[in-house]
Image (cartoon, rainbow, N blue to C red; front, side):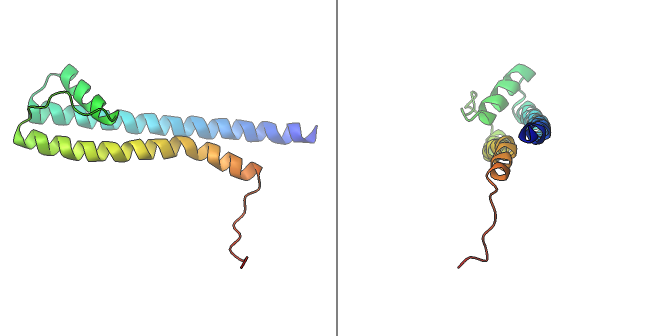
Length: 116
């Protein structure tokens, strides 16, 4: 019965951390999508639907839809593609971190730096 009492607060804390990391990840994705839409709208004069499609495809790892870009548009698309790759890695790490932390605490993972 004592393990039930201990696991309930741990489960609530894990759920809270998961929701917090999910909220931060969604905020980062929404902000990145907004920057991509603004960039495509500014450099390529695309309507918001086409700008959304191109930015979402790059963030999703699919690549841009519109390929005949202007010179400034190509530079923006290149930098946004590099940034999108980093966002995917960051969001993956943010979403996995609470679960990995929880597992490490459950198995009592310790740093054994004093062992030879």
